[in-house]
Length: 275
Image 1 (cartoon, one colour):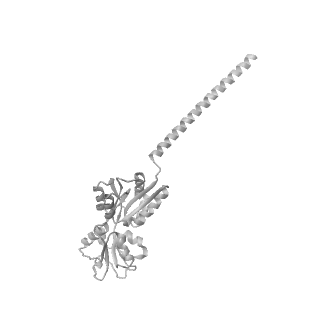
Image 2 (cartoon, rainbow, N blue to C red):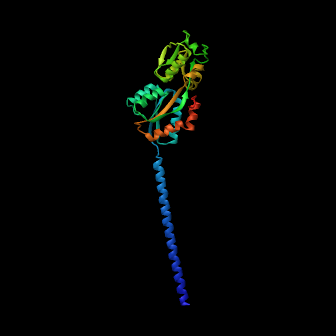
Image 3 (tube, rainbow, N blue to C red):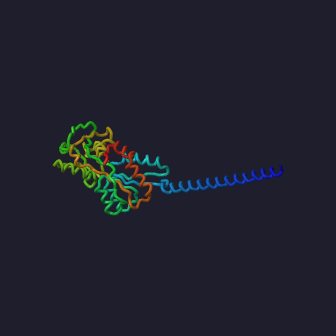
Protein backbone atom coordinates (compact mmCIF):
# COMPACT_ATOMS: atom_id res chain seq x y z
CA UNK A 1 0.00 0.00 0.00
CA UNK A 2 2.82 2.38 0.93
CA UNK A 3 4.63 1.58 -2.33
CA UNK A 4 1.47 2.44 -4.30
CA UNK A 5 1.03 5.87 -2.60
CA UNK A 6 4.67 6.78 -3.26
CA UNK A 7 4.28 5.84 -6.92
CA UNK A 8 1.15 8.00 -7.18
CA UNK A 9 3.01 10.97 -5.66
CA UNK A 10 5.84 10.39 -8.10
CA UNK A 11 3.45 10.37 -11.10
CA UNK A 12 1.71 13.53 -9.93
CA UNK A 13 5.05 15.27 -9.45
CA UNK A 14 6.11 14.28 -12.96
CA UNK A 15 2.84 15.62 -14.35
CA UNK A 16 3.39 18.94 -12.57
CA UNK A 17 6.87 19.25 -14.07
CA UNK A 18 5.57 18.37 -17.53
CA UNK A 19 2.78 20.93 -17.14
CA UNK A 20 5.24 23.61 -16.10
CA UNK A 21 7.41 22.78 -19.08
CA UNK A 22 4.48 23.04 -21.47
CA UNK A 23 3.47 26.36 -19.94
CA UNK A 24 7.02 27.63 -20.36
CA UNK A 25 7.02 26.56 -24.00
CA UNK A 26 3.71 28.29 -24.57
CA UNK A 27 5.03 31.47 -22.96
CA UNK A 28 8.16 31.39 -25.13
CA UNK A 29 6.02 30.81 -28.20
CA UNK A 30 3.78 33.74 -27.29
CA UNK A 31 6.80 36.01 -26.73
CA UNK A 32 8.25 34.92 -30.05
CA UNK A 33 4.92 35.55 -31.81
CA UNK A 34 4.60 38.95 -30.14
CA UNK A 35 8.15 39.82 -31.12
CA UNK A 36 7.47 38.80 -34.73
CA UNK A 37 4.28 40.87 -34.76
CA UNK A 38 6.10 43.89 -33.34
CA UNK A 39 8.81 43.40 -35.94
CA UNK A 40 6.24 43.21 -38.72
CA UNK A 41 4.49 46.31 -37.41
CA UNK A 42 7.78 48.17 -37.28
CA UNK A 43 8.52 47.09 -40.83
CA UNK A 44 5.11 48.25 -42.03
CA UNK A 45 5.56 51.52 -40.18
CA UNK A 46 8.97 52.14 -41.74
CA UNK A 47 7.65 51.36 -45.23
CA UNK A 48 4.67 53.73 -44.79
CA UNK A 49 5.94 56.58 -42.61
CA UNK A 50 3.43 58.89 -40.96
CA UNK A 51 3.29 62.09 -42.99
CA UNK A 52 3.77 65.43 -41.30
CA UNK A 53 4.94 68.95 -41.97
CA UNK A 54 4.28 71.46 -44.70
CA UNK A 55 3.82 70.63 -48.39
CA UNK A 56 4.37 73.59 -50.72
CA UNK A 57 2.60 73.33 -54.05
CA UNK A 58 3.22 75.74 -56.94
CA UNK A 59 0.18 75.47 -59.22
CA UNK A 60 -1.30 77.20 -62.26
CA UNK A 61 -3.89 79.85 -61.35
CA UNK A 62 -6.66 77.87 -63.06
CA UNK A 63 -6.20 75.09 -60.49
CA UNK A 64 -6.97 77.32 -57.51
CA UNK A 65 -10.46 76.08 -56.62
CA UNK A 66 -9.90 72.36 -57.20
CA UNK A 67 -6.44 72.23 -55.60
CA UNK A 68 -7.64 74.16 -52.55
CA UNK A 69 -10.31 71.48 -52.08
CA UNK A 70 -7.74 68.69 -52.53
CA UNK A 71 -5.42 70.40 -50.06
CA UNK A 72 -8.13 70.33 -47.42
CA UNK A 73 -8.81 66.67 -48.18
CA UNK A 74 -5.12 65.84 -47.87
CA UNK A 75 -4.83 67.53 -44.47
CA UNK A 76 -7.83 65.55 -43.18
CA UNK A 77 -6.35 62.29 -44.47
CA UNK A 78 -2.95 63.08 -42.92
CA UNK A 79 -3.31 64.93 -39.61
CA UNK A 80 -0.16 66.89 -38.88
CA UNK A 81 0.35 68.03 -42.47
CA UNK A 82 -0.28 71.45 -43.95
CA UNK A 83 -0.61 72.17 -47.67
CA UNK A 84 0.30 75.67 -48.79
CA UNK A 85 -0.20 76.92 -52.33
CA UNK A 86 1.33 79.47 -54.64
CA UNK A 87 -1.14 80.06 -57.47
CA UNK A 88 0.06 82.15 -60.41
CA UNK A 89 0.81 82.04 -64.10
CA UNK A 90 2.74 78.88 -64.94
CA UNK A 91 5.63 80.80 -66.50
CA UNK A 92 6.03 82.90 -63.34
CA UNK A 93 6.02 79.79 -61.16
CA UNK A 94 8.53 78.00 -63.40
CA UNK A 95 10.87 80.99 -63.23
CA UNK A 96 10.60 81.03 -59.43
CA UNK A 97 11.40 77.32 -59.18
CA UNK A 98 14.43 77.52 -61.47
CA UNK A 99 15.49 80.59 -59.52
CA UNK A 100 15.67 78.53 -56.33
CA UNK A 101 12.30 79.13 -54.66
CA UNK A 102 11.63 76.26 -52.20
CA UNK A 103 8.70 74.08 -53.27
CA UNK A 104 7.69 70.42 -53.23
CA UNK A 105 5.31 70.09 -56.18
CA UNK A 106 4.79 71.93 -59.48
CA UNK A 107 1.53 71.65 -61.44
CA UNK A 108 1.66 73.52 -64.74
CA UNK A 109 -1.02 74.48 -67.25
CA UNK A 110 1.10 73.37 -70.20
CA UNK A 111 3.97 71.03 -71.10
CA UNK A 112 5.92 74.03 -72.41
CA UNK A 113 6.13 75.75 -69.04
CA UNK A 114 6.84 72.42 -67.35
CA UNK A 115 9.78 72.00 -69.76
CA UNK A 116 11.34 75.14 -68.26
CA UNK A 117 11.62 73.23 -64.98
CA UNK A 118 12.62 69.84 -66.37
CA UNK A 119 15.23 71.33 -68.72
CA UNK A 120 16.79 73.06 -65.73
CA UNK A 121 17.04 69.72 -63.92
CA UNK A 122 14.70 70.91 -61.17
CA UNK A 123 12.16 68.06 -61.49
CA UNK A 124 12.44 64.63 -59.90
CA UNK A 125 11.38 62.03 -62.44
CA UNK A 126 9.07 62.46 -65.42
CA UNK A 127 6.06 64.81 -65.08
CA UNK A 128 2.65 63.16 -65.50
CA UNK A 129 -0.34 64.72 -67.28
CA UNK A 130 -3.25 64.64 -64.83
CA UNK A 131 -5.96 66.76 -66.56
CA UNK A 132 -6.71 68.80 -69.67
CA UNK A 133 -8.43 72.17 -70.07
CA UNK A 134 -10.19 73.98 -72.90
CA UNK A 135 -10.84 77.64 -73.63
CA UNK A 136 -14.15 79.44 -73.39
CA UNK A 137 -15.24 83.06 -73.80
CA UNK A 138 -16.34 84.75 -70.59
CA UNK A 139 -18.80 87.61 -71.14
CA UNK A 140 -20.72 89.94 -68.84
CA UNK A 141 -23.64 88.25 -67.07
CA UNK A 142 -26.42 87.47 -69.54
CA UNK A 143 -24.11 88.15 -72.50
CA UNK A 144 -25.56 91.63 -73.27
CA UNK A 145 -23.28 92.07 -76.30
CA UNK A 146 -24.60 88.84 -77.84
CA UNK A 147 -21.17 87.30 -78.32
CA UNK A 148 -21.58 83.97 -80.08
CA UNK A 149 -18.20 83.31 -81.69
CA UNK A 150 -14.50 84.09 -81.51
CA UNK A 151 -14.93 86.37 -84.50
CA UNK A 152 -17.39 88.53 -82.54
CA UNK A 153 -14.52 89.50 -80.24
CA UNK A 154 -12.86 91.40 -83.09
CA UNK A 155 -15.65 93.99 -82.99
CA UNK A 156 -13.96 97.33 -82.29
CA UNK A 157 -16.76 98.28 -79.90
CA UNK A 158 -15.90 95.48 -77.47
CA UNK A 159 -13.34 95.66 -74.70
CA UNK A 160 -11.66 92.25 -74.75
CA UNK A 161 -8.98 90.91 -72.42
CA UNK A 162 -6.52 88.09 -73.16
CA UNK A 163 -3.88 86.35 -71.13
CA UNK A 164 -0.34 87.27 -72.06
CA UNK A 165 1.01 84.90 -74.70
CA UNK A 166 3.86 83.89 -72.37
CA UNK A 167 1.36 82.04 -70.14
CA UNK A 168 -0.54 78.90 -71.21
CA UNK A 169 -4.01 80.49 -71.50
CA UNK A 170 -2.57 83.24 -73.70
CA UNK A 171 -0.62 80.81 -75.87
CA UNK A 172 -3.77 78.71 -76.30
CA UNK A 173 -5.82 81.79 -77.24
CA UNK A 174 -3.21 82.74 -79.85
CA UNK A 175 -3.34 79.21 -81.25
CA UNK A 176 -7.15 79.38 -81.52
CA UNK A 177 -7.02 82.79 -83.20
CA UNK A 178 -4.41 81.58 -85.67
CA UNK A 179 -6.53 78.51 -86.44
CA UNK A 180 -9.46 80.77 -87.32
CA UNK A 181 -7.37 83.34 -89.20
CA UNK A 182 -8.45 86.15 -86.88
CA UNK A 183 -6.58 89.14 -85.51
CA UNK A 184 -7.62 90.53 -82.17
CA UNK A 185 -6.24 93.54 -80.31
CA UNK A 186 -7.20 93.31 -76.62
CA UNK A 187 -7.42 96.24 -74.24
CA UNK A 188 -4.95 94.43 -71.98
CA UNK A 189 -2.86 91.29 -71.62
CA UNK A 190 -2.99 89.71 -68.17
CA UNK A 191 -0.33 87.64 -66.42
CA UNK A 192 -2.66 84.78 -65.48
CA UNK A 193 -6.13 83.54 -66.32
CA UNK A 194 -7.70 84.66 -63.04
CA UNK A 195 -6.59 88.24 -63.68
CA UNK A 196 -8.19 88.13 -67.14
CA UNK A 197 -11.43 86.77 -65.71
CA UNK A 198 -11.49 89.38 -62.93
CA UNK A 199 -11.56 92.17 -65.53
CA UNK A 200 -14.92 90.85 -66.75
CA UNK A 201 -16.23 90.17 -63.24
CA UNK A 202 -15.50 93.80 -62.34
CA UNK A 203 -17.05 94.98 -65.62
CA UNK A 204 -13.75 96.52 -66.68
CA UNK A 205 -13.95 94.43 -69.86
CA UNK A 206 -16.80 93.05 -71.95
CA UNK A 207 -15.22 89.66 -72.58
CA UNK A 208 -12.13 87.56 -71.97
CA UNK A 209 -10.78 84.32 -73.37
CA UNK A 210 -10.22 82.04 -70.38
CA UNK A 211 -10.62 78.38 -69.45
CA UNK A 212 -13.92 76.54 -69.07
CA UNK A 213 -12.96 75.81 -65.47
CA UNK A 214 -12.66 79.52 -64.70
CA UNK A 215 -16.06 80.30 -66.21
CA UNK A 216 -17.57 77.53 -64.10
CA UNK A 217 -15.85 78.74 -60.93
CA UNK A 218 -17.13 82.29 -61.50
CA UNK A 219 -20.75 81.13 -61.35
CA UNK A 220 -23.27 83.86 -62.23
CA UNK A 221 -20.60 86.58 -62.30
CA UNK A 222 -20.02 85.81 -65.99
CA UNK A 223 -21.67 83.96 -68.87
CA UNK A 224 -19.69 81.41 -70.86
CA UNK A 225 -19.69 81.09 -74.64
CA UNK A 226 -18.20 78.04 -76.36
CA UNK A 227 -16.39 78.38 -79.67
CA UNK A 228 -15.28 75.53 -81.96
CA UNK A 229 -11.69 76.76 -82.42
CA UNK A 230 -11.03 75.96 -78.76
CA UNK A 231 -10.83 72.28 -79.68
CA UNK A 232 -7.58 73.06 -81.49
CA UNK A 233 -6.01 74.63 -78.42
CA UNK A 234 -6.54 72.16 -75.56
CA UNK A 235 -3.93 72.34 -72.79
CA UNK A 236 -2.45 69.32 -71.01
CA UNK A 237 -1.62 69.89 -67.34
CA UNK A 238 1.48 68.05 -66.06
CA UNK A 239 2.49 67.64 -62.40
CA UNK A 240 5.84 66.69 -60.88
CA UNK A 241 7.76 66.24 -57.67
CA UNK A 242 10.57 68.77 -57.48
CA UNK A 243 14.16 67.64 -57.11
CA UNK A 244 14.93 69.71 -54.00
CA UNK A 245 11.54 69.15 -52.35
CA UNK A 246 11.82 69.80 -48.60
CA UNK A 247 9.08 67.24 -47.82
CA UNK A 248 9.42 64.46 -50.39
CA UNK A 249 7.17 61.82 -48.77
CA UNK A 250 4.23 64.18 -48.29
CA UNK A 251 4.76 65.68 -51.75
CA UNK A 252 4.54 62.24 -53.37
CA UNK A 253 1.37 61.52 -51.41
CA UNK A 254 -0.23 64.79 -52.55
CA UNK A 255 0.57 63.98 -56.20
CA UNK A 256 -0.99 60.54 -55.75
CA UNK A 257 -4.15 62.16 -54.36
CA UNK A 258 -4.36 64.45 -57.41
CA UNK A 259 -4.05 61.46 -59.75
CA UNK A 260 -6.37 59.20 -57.74
CA UNK A 261 -10.04 58.55 -58.51
CA UNK A 262 -10.98 60.91 -55.68
CA UNK A 263 -8.74 63.65 -57.06
CA UNK A 264 -10.07 63.17 -60.57
CA UNK A 265 -13.65 63.51 -59.31
CA UNK A 266 -12.82 66.89 -57.82
CA UNK A 267 -11.01 68.06 -60.96
CA UNK A 268 -13.63 66.90 -63.47
CA UNK A 269 -16.29 68.37 -61.21
CA UNK A 270 -14.51 71.71 -61.65
CA UNK A 271 -14.71 71.37 -65.43
CA UNK A 272 -11.36 69.78 -66.25
CA UNK A 273 -11.13 66.87 -68.70
CA UNK A 274 -9.38 63.59 -68.02
CA UNK A 275 -6.12 63.09 -69.97
